Length: 596
Image (cartoon, rainbow, N blue to C red; front, side, top):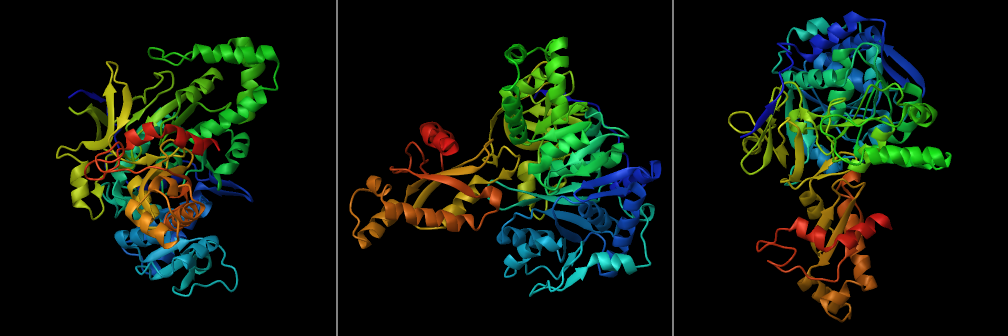
């Protein structure tokens, strides 16, 4: 078995509260968190004071050692305070996506054992929608100002901000850190599984700190650096790259509450490090191309020359950008207009990034390195380092990680960032982790002689969309099929795409009976185009979508005039989808749903 590795970053017996305390002590007056609308800042010492007060309040209302506390919050300053305060009170913060369906929220709160949920006043409506679920919850706490006449029918609401103003207690970070060990649980991160049920990934202080230490070193983070926090904190990349790394390396964080605002935030913040999912890089590229079309023809020719120079793989380093004069005249102003002229390192990850997108930015003098990992490895595994990349590769092992290729080609990862296991799922844990600590990624790849990793295929049936969200196609398909018995087989497509689409075929037996009852005649292949059939299937898809989070929902579908028999082109003898064969056979239908 071929293995590639890097020397580990030592995190010793540290825990995150210990790191927070040192972070504050190094520069208490330095700005830690910044919001732009309205303009608000929190210095490190102000942050520590708010965390200490809220931790004392949480203790007073009953949070105990190792108790899971849910955080249903957007990307706000208050999230950081709440997350750290739960830790300082002895609890385990568990972030939940505000876009999750009521059924998903119910499952995760039950699995994590969440009795107390901290949220924002603006998200109370999500809880109202889910009131018939969430039996596990005892109490809802709001961390911002609660408007008058707001209540839930089911739970008492605690106003944390008011309690923080009146409490005389405060739990110092240094004191709280004394009772926390490196192997204690720092958080649970829920990720989709191939069977559909979310899995709670158990990540310890040692797991996450080692990942942040390794990745932050490669990112060239340091005191005085600036980053933008825009990923949801229910995503492990958001926690590691935009939270834990910031604390370990002394970086100022500007909080962007909405991804749509990122282009504006880039120009204001001018980050020294920036990470974006493939879909965002694609949007930035489209904006640049629109601007570039207005430049003189010779400038456009220079860009095309630079792009051509990046068209072929280079041995071990990024190709040079455009010539010095062209760079000064055209590309440097473009980098400044983007807000990336002060960025030392740029990265992408969570889903495959098209090579032409990477080549485009490299031509502008903005080389982007890949990051390869999983929730189960704290988003840590391989990483493209500045000046050391191979187009098409996801980079080399980060410090503290080993990469191996199993006999069947599966990529294996081992190191301190690898999870403790899945919460309450020992069988799934045994499937994912070998006895000697290797995490089975489900991806197929190869290692070259220089230790670079190349991903060639995926064993696991997971959709990772162009924004990096992991989804189970089997779960989505089951929900869509549940919408109407007319729906026979469903194949959802969305990997590396902006949204999910579906190929649907009718249930032949039910469709015939359904049609006969409505005096609709004709073979099954013609029923698919009948307006009443299409309307019924569309209504079924909508009903299924209501049981899914927004990002999981099927945005478009095609009802095929076909049957998918067992052991045919599309289904195995046991009626499992042959996904690759389906996507190949119906490629034109699929592409049409992304073009229209």
